[in-house]
Structure formats: structure tokens, C-alpha cells
Length: 296
Length: 108
Image (cartoon, rainbow over all chains, first blue to last red; front, side):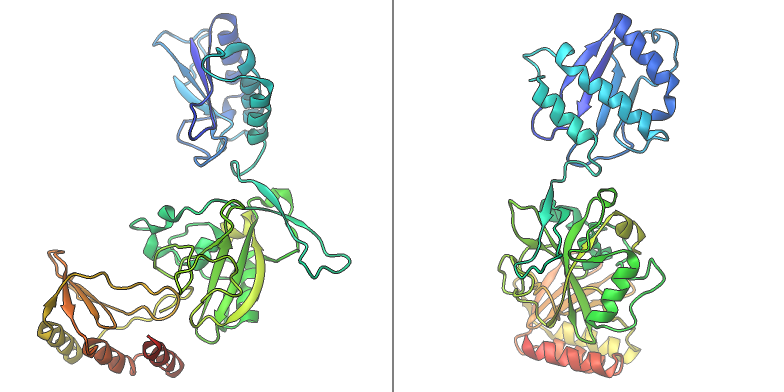
């Protein structure tokens, strides 16, 4: 007997069902033929959203068909050598929910399946994609870009071993490098002055775009960030959080991540919030998948 | 005092180290109050000794963390410790950064 668990929820229990007999043999045969699609259960995406389908034996009996697969493994959560087949298998398992999951255990209706299939094919977990723009002063030809906004999670950044080794650029990029990341350093084009144009150019070298120069879906997660400069002294970044929260977060150097400005007020506008010596507002930008993986 | 760049840091001379230790030892103990984290801009000085002892100085608040990690507060209402550290910083910081530090400490 096999238990199939769709690992996708945070609050409610994950949907699960059991396969045996011919269905068990059929699934194991399918997976064994596409073995590069599986990973151990600790590999792959581990945040909010679809984390994979977990398949586990419920007994220590030899597997039907002698396929020599692990007793417990994951499919479709990312990190497999063959992600295309992993997604295909995961989709099959999700589509099996309505016919296998007891109604008392899970609301396995078509909406749930559609929801889970939507998560499955959404890179980067369940970050909602929202339109950004055009600005109020839009001109003909201005565009609306799609961006991803995530919830404020300061605990991630304020943990011991993380807080002192990651700065505002790490926070804006939502990417922990433990290197106090510097704009342009990963691209070999670090800024050579502390000015809006110089730091902007360095961020462009990492892969940032100016706001309303859209990134494609393949670059999710795409974040809206803002850059400010203390002329000749330093720079600082902010990142917008979820629509329901409606504020911006930031991390002043090696100090705690926060969503308030120097006056202790929640930041709803980085252009007007209290920024101490960071008097120059350089503009809004997008970070993206390629950029965050490049920063050092 | 920075957000994006790494904070400036330097090694003090033996004479400066002795001066810092004497200043701290001369401060009366006080209630343990967290050193204020002011966000963007100057936030204070962090002093570390080779043996692991450390102290944080921000305005009138001085927090000493000895090797045994039993932290204690010191009262420095005249900000003598901070003034001494700002004075020492002059020879270690570039002129523009020193001016920035002065403006920030004054603003605090």
C-alpha cells in the first residue's frame, strides 16, 4: 500500500489518499521508468505553496513489482534531474484526488484539484502575481508589468547567523547570500561611487530592471523594490510586500528587518518615509530570479 | 552606520585600547537598557576585544558584554565614551565619512 500526500497547505491538513493493488503497481511501474523525476523528501521547494507530492510505503513489504524505489520519496517539488516528468507524475497524482480521497478527509472536488494544479505549474510557490502600473502620470505606450508580492517575514532575516551577514540588497532581492551583497559585485561591475546613477548601473548589471520594463514569467519571482542613496556615503533598498499588507520592508545593514521608517511609522511610501541621511530617491526597480541568483 | 556598504571598522592602538577600557571601567553601573536601534544612519559603535568581550555605545547608552556573556549596562549621561570614540575615529575614517559621522552624532 502506498500513501500519496499532496504537500501544499500550511494551515489545513494536506490532501492524502491510499493506493493499492493494480493502482499501486501501475504507479510504481510508471515512477520507476522515470526515476530521474523523484527526489528525497527534503529536496526542492520548502516554502508556502506546492511543495511536491510525497509517496510512501505503508508497510515494510517488498514493493509490488520489485522496483527498488525508496520507501518514501517526493515528486514535483523541484530539484529533480527530470522536472518535466516530475510535474507530469505530480499532476497525475493530484488528478487522482477526487476518486481516492474520502470526502470526510478532504474536500476533493474539482476546485481543489484546479487549485492544486495551478500551484503545481506556478514557479516559486504560491506567490500571488499582481499587476504593477502603469503610473498615474501614464503616457501612451506605458505598460503594466506583472510582479510577485510576498508577506513580511522578518524572522527569516533576523535569525542568528543571518542578521549580521545580509543587508538591504539581500532583503530587497529576497535572497540570502551571507556575503552582505553589493550591487554589481556578482556581475563583476560593482558600483564605483555612492550615487543614484552609479548604484543603479551596478544593479542593472546584476539583472535589475527599471520599473515598467517588464520581466517575463520565466523570471518569477519579480519584486518591486526602491533604491535610495545617502550621497557619497551609502545606499539603501526597500521591497514591497503583499497587497493585503500594503507596506514596504527593509533591512538597515546588519540590523533587524522591519517595516517601519526612522520615525517608527509603517512604510507605505518609500519616497516620503523617514530615511535619515538617505536623502536621494533613485527610483523604483524590479528584481527577478536571474538577478537574485547572481548577487554576491 | 551603513545599510548597503559594510560598516567601517579599524583596530585601535594599544594606547587607545587602554583608554577605552579605562573609560568603561570608570562608568557607574546602570540598569540594563537595550541600546536603541535607530534604523537608517548612525546607530553607534561596537567595540570588540580579542578575548571576546564587547561593548556597544550609542549616545548615553553603554552595554558591556564580558567574556562570560553576563551583560551589564553603564550610565554615561555626558556621552564621554561616544565622544572619545568619535575623536579616535578621525584618524581612521576618510574625511567625508568622518564629517558624515560628526553630522550624524550631532543629529542624534
